[in-house]
Length: 221
Image (cartoon, rainbow, N blue to C red):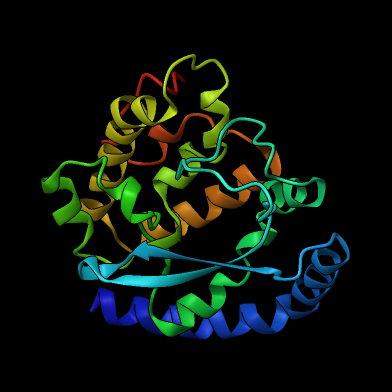
């Protein structure tokens, strides 16, 4: 019953989200155009439910004139323009994903969908479990790793190796916890703490609100 009701809620609230956010979305698209970008919408292929690739929509925050071979966003990445930093910090760049939710590619809450080349950093057993549910715009991992690129600030070696050996295991534990414990109550709490993280930054004492939540050395409370 939970999956069907959750899908119904996704459809209803994604339609409301599209209608409410339309003015802000149009203003952002106009400002991206004025910054010199001719394509305000960024489309990338992500791993979805059952391992199927889908096109995820975001507002463009990086200059196409500065391509990078890495799938990861570095700390103070020079590809991100001034307005793009605001869009990313405020999460306004995620507004087009209401259409992904309506289309059934995403849910409001679930494991964050990853690029195929990043998904390969995770063990096969983790990939298999994550593929059993629809990914989400936000999730327990998204709250902990809201400013993931900041973790690369003091990394002197390869960002890819740091992600694979430090971030990926921590994210895997969090997302596996969600797949095992997901419910309407958990989803509601994640949405609430996502809003808290959006307005106040890092959320503290999450273990008091989520039973048996795994810990990680990257975030000591």
